[in-house]
Image 1 (spheres, rainbow, N blue to C red):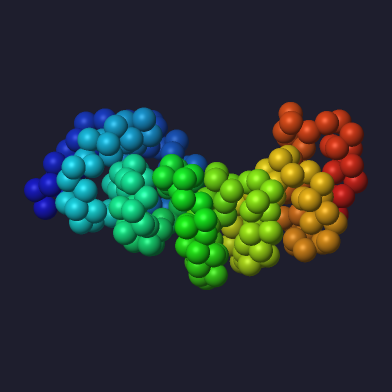
Image 2: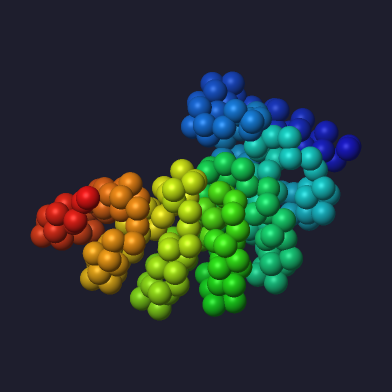
Amino acid sequence: MQYYDGLLKELNSYADESYRSFHKRLLKNDSVNVLGVRVPQLRKIAKSRLKSLDELLSCPDEYYEVTFIKLTAVSLLSYGEFIKHVDGCVALIDNWATCDCFTPKCIAKYRSEFLPYILTYIETDKEFYQRFALTTLLHFYVEEKYFDTIIHTVKKADTQKYYYVHMAVAWLVAEAIIKMYDDAVDFLNQGVLDKKTHNKAIQKALESYRLTDEQKTYLKGLKR
C-alpha cells in the first residue's frame, strides 16, 4: 500500500476542486470517485510510472484518476506488452471519458492482429466493452479496407440498451459517412440502425466541414 499511498499523495497535490466538480458532472456517473486532476498531468504521471507498471496495476481502482493512469500507462507499451494487459484494462472501464481516452497508438501498426479483440468485445453484453470496440474502430479503422468490419460491428452493438453504445455507433457511422460517403449512405439507406441512432449519426455528420452542401442536403432527407 506504500506505493498506492504515494500515488494518491501525488495526485492530491494536483487536485483542483472546481475541476473535480466540473468533471464529475460530465461523467454522469455518481459511483465514480474523482479527485480533480487534469488530463495533461495524469498523462505525465502515467509516463513517469511506466517503470513500476506492475505496482501501478496492483493499486485499487478507487478513483477515476488511478484507473486513467493505469490505462494510459498500458497504452504507451509496445503492442506485444500491451496485449498482455488489454483485457484487464477494458474490464476497468466504467465511464465514457476513461473509455474514449484509452487509445493505444500501438494498435495503428497492428490493426489486423487486434481485430479479433474488437470482435470479441462487441459481443460482450457490457456497455463499455462495446463502446471501446467502437471507439477503437473510430480511431484506427475508418477506411475502405475495414468498412465491412465496421458495419458488422455496428450491427452487433446494442444501441437500444446502452446509451454510450448508441452514441459511439452514431459517432462511428458519422465518421464513415465523412470518409466513405457512398458506402456509408448505402448502409444508411438499408435502415439497419434504430431511428434514434440513425438520426444522431446524420446529425453528427452534418456538423462536419468535410462534406459538401449537396451531400448535407441529401443526408437531411434521410432523417427518419
